[in-house]
Length: 64
Image (cartoon, rainbow, N blue to C red; front, top):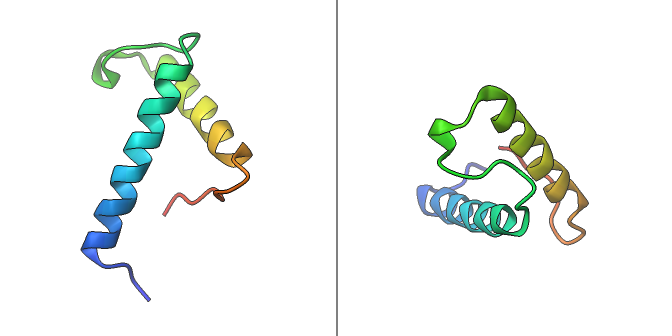
């Protein structure tokens, strides 16, 4: 069954909050406005965030 728009927005908000906390906790990664980062810097951040999510015991990796 498809998620409602409210559920999708709630999930998106939770993901944004999780990413923000992750970014603050990792000063070793490129910082700043995502629009101003290079492709290499973005790929570095994405890989680290995916690893962070996959290691979380209480939350499985869900990209859809």
